[in-house]
Amino acid sequence: MLHIYCPHCGESRDEEEFHPVGQAHIERPKDPDACSDKEWGEFLYFRRNPRGLHHELWVHAAGCRKFFNMTRNTQTYEIKEVYKLGEQPSVVAE
Amino acid sequence: MQHYSGFALLKHSFSHHENWQRVWRNPTPKKKYDVIIVGGGGHGLATAYYLAKQFGVTNVAVIEKGFLGGGNTARNTTIVRSNYLWDEAAHLYEHAMKLWEGLSQDLNYNVMFSQRGCLNLGHTLQDMRDIERRVNANRLNGIDGEVLDAKQVKEIVPALDCSENARYPVLGASWQPRAGIARHDAVAWGFARGADAHGVDLIQQTEVEDLIIEDDTVVGVRTKRYGDIKADRVGCVVAGNSSVLAKMAGFELPLESHPLQALVSEPIKPILDTVVMSNQVHGYASQSDKGDLVIGAGIDGYNGYGQRGSYSTIEHTIQAIVEMFPIFSRVRMNRQWGGIVDTTPDACPIISETPVKNLFFNCGWGTGGFKATPGSGNVFAASLAKGEMHPLAKPFSMFRFHDGSLVDEHGAAGVAH
Image 1 (cartoon, rainbow over the protein chains, first blue to last red):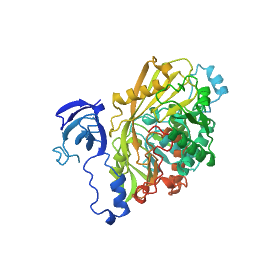
Image 2 (cartoon, rainbow over the protein chains, first blue to last red):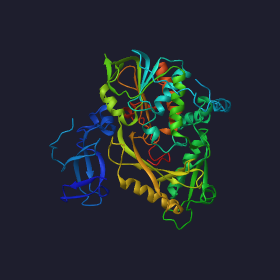
Image 3 (cartoon, rainbow over the protein chains, first blue to last red):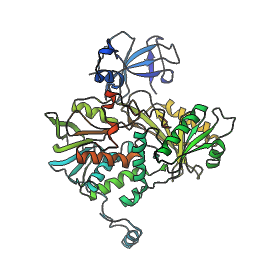
């Protein structure tokens, strides 16, 4: 069970209140019509899947219902840091 | 290979069973192979077995970082069925089902395949519509299936709460009589023994550190224990760690690795002689020959390579099981564990050529790979032997995520994803 600090609520809460959404920092192509099939497919379906540090988007679903980012180790499950949307992580996954 | 039979059992009883051969050798790898298979789980061993037996490619090594069948093969809930909705998936899983039906004889190894049937419950009108659609699709594909109403379900599983008072009343189910369960370890061991007997080298406790690639062509693997081992073709069958191997080869796969948990209860008297699955309340159970209830959870939502998940996930699963079977409410759980499953966006596997020549991947089986073990090995072996994909494997190319030709079994296959 993860113990997660919500940067909006300013409190650590049980994982059950949260919902993982997937990889963080995915940018929608600025001009989708100009994308090749490969580029569009990669935007839709290809996600980073590192064994180690990973930037993830989470939502405090049963709490403040706000989104935030988390840097977490997918091997040890250690949470390195949480930060709000629009902010950059201080620990960067390779 | 020593043949297993009643007569052999009798013969060896005279020498107190002390002279049975080792089931497989423990060889030192050669410098070069025709085919190297990375990953010695069920799918990898099945691939090696069919390569050697059916396609005559015997200069093969299986390289495994731990011990044979110690990953997801040892961690699944052993359910075998082929009632998938879409033609491509149905054909692939039915190919596996047909191989399951003769597998113990073929391997001369009892995989304890028990065709006890599988129920996929429907709790809403939409569930029932989906079930009818899927059963009809199955029958058109030559796969057995029936739509049952609640009364018929109750007759098959008396312990199931089919009353109208249930929170999510059972309205009916799809029923595949040929589905069932098999002994997961025996499957790995049977394929390993068969492959070894045909000359395949099973190299255990040897982790692949890198793939050796020259001019966009794979020429071998690099291991810490034995250094470089050359190969004409390399097949990666490493489930949860597929993305890590793909990264070594310099490309990405549309996979996310998640923890998937399962648990077993204390052994109890026979009460459940079939497999019961429910998407709606999200739980499934069967009873092993040993008597324990085998219960599978859904995946944990976050990515994880840790072979463990969160407690809340199995708690929800147990809630679903008690909802379905109130009679189990005081059964105690004995053990709980997790595996790493590599999930694809469309819940169908990737059996594919890659951007690197002579490098093939068989991965992305997600939460439901065990049922496909013989079929997956068979089509992957055919592909590795010929250097081009088997017709059943063609729809499962990794490039389908570029051109959009997905085989979308997500939510369609009665799978408790």
